[in-house]
Amino acid sequence: MKSTNPYALPRNEIERLRSLARRQAELAALPVMQARRQLWTDMNDAKPGARPPFAIESWTFDRDFMPSSLFQCQTPYARGLENTFLRHIRHHEILNDDHVCPATLDMGWHVRYDEFGIQIKTEYEKDAEGQVLGYHFDCPVKDLRDGFDMIRPSTYSLDREGTMAEKAFLEETFGDILPVAIRSGTFGQNNLTQRLMRIMSMETFFLGMADCPEKVHGIMTLLKDNAKGMALWGEREGLLTLNNGNECTCGTCFNFTTLLPRKPAAPGSVKLKDMWAGMDSQETVGVSPAQFHEFCFPYYKELAELFGFVYWGCCEPADPIWETSLSRLPNLKAVSISKWARQEYMAEMLAGKGIVFSRKPDPNLLGVDVQLNEAAWAEEIRRTLDLTVKRNVPLSFVVRDVYTMHGNLEKARRAVEIGRREIDRVFGPLRV
Image (cartoon, rainbow, N blue to C red; front, side):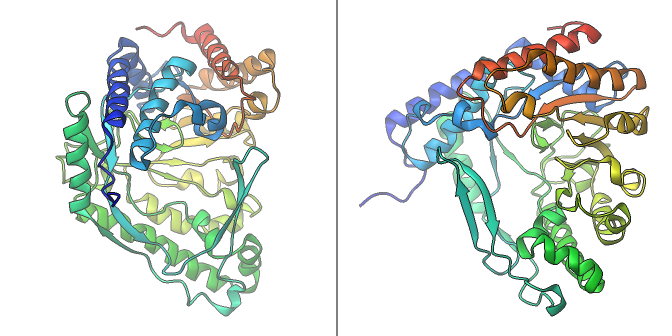
């Protein structure tokens, strides 16, 4: 009978994984990794004259970056570890961006989570290459005027024994190569309108603001209470681990900072005020600033008050709601500046505030054409530098939402080289 123990791995797979772990450890020890840690730290600490880091998020173009031909492990658990090791290694060996290769083997707590007390059917659509291109939720709330009684508050629990069993396996197998570390976020789901779209359509939400505003406030209160309740549960259970180092709150935006925690926090006693948290509201791009402030902002504000630092945004433009809402968001430390944002306006608004201008360059320049338009890419980077450096705005470049490299990873590496070249013109080369 086949074993159901996920940690019962074949010897050849363990040997393969240990080899990859050794390579990760070698890369993590390179002098350039310490220089990159300092790069992200200086930027997040808003150190005057801090050089902006430049990173590319790779998972969206895994058809090119992580093709199936790379993998040798067949056991599902081993395959997951293989993916983790390979991604860290390939980020340095192929892209050579400002990712910091981890010096630890990270895992998470085993948490059971039922968000709504109801199963929400999800349909996925794939492209011609079999990659998931989009998805659709069969939302249970069809008309908000009828209420949302079928939606229940979140429930969650911890499998501490299961967590420790995985940690013991990892330490026994890899502990002589990489220290094993349990990591955590802040728990809960802080992207409230993203969760909203799982239980009702955008049309239902938009009509509800006009037809039954009290119901909209009711469902937003439920979502906020879900997120807040789970975050406070994680704090009470002693599950929070500091995320002020080689962790992310949004995509590939790393959290290195000396500003958190504000006072020493021993393991098991970390508070939400010691943590970075991420929030966004892509789903309200079609909502007026006044409506966002009325129907969404109060709930985000209550959550933001819990944390040490907040990273706001994803692909949505920040500028339409900056004056009415975002400028009043507690503990705001970084703002996503996407392709659709007014860069100059946001540079002016963030000038001298110590809030990170987290620039997402236009992904179409890198992902649409087979060949990289190097002049256009350089101009994209140069314009952001011109707008921010003179205004004393801490800056990072994070390339996201590129879905294919057309089989040519050299294009991604070249994008990094050009980005770094343009940064060097202003800040000089990175000192290693």
